[in-house]
Image (cartoon, rainbow, N blue to C red; front, side, top):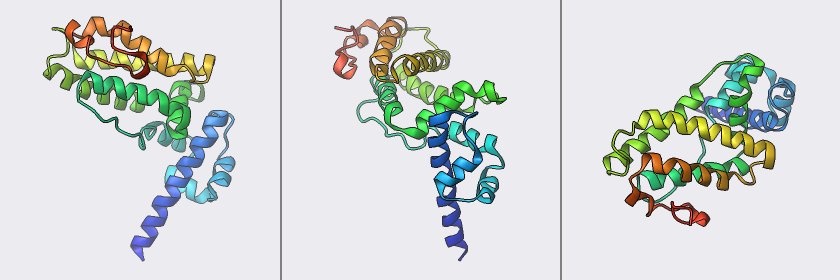
Length: 208
């Protein structure tokens, strides 16, 4: 009995997160009400407040769980894996509503009184881990700090996706992220490594 209740609670929470992401994606924080969220989820106000405490609470959950269902690119570790992952994020932003809503809320959060960098810190940690592997593989230039560049990459990626969202609805984001890497790689990667990196349809790391 207890297990069935727990499983039901997990399903209810997941449905509320999904519904909230869809509403926030459509209308942002200001244009979304808890009434709209529970109606889309087929749930109750009591369930929303039980799991999240408030509209702000569910917004924080969407922000902080934005990467929960992302696929992991196959292939070798290091810089190529990190490049593949950032390009996969660009693809997912066009179709993954939880990711898209979480990113939108993280960017817009100051407008509704939240200052929470948890989501950004999660991406910094994720990128740093891959850069540490790249460093161990001898792919990075001497003196490149994985933690420092991970912060720079998250900041640059955030700005690039925001511009792409506003100007092209994320339609050009993969190309814009490929451009980002073409400019960053000469500063962080050994020349012989750059020649071997690929950006999918964009070709090798030299941009040819």
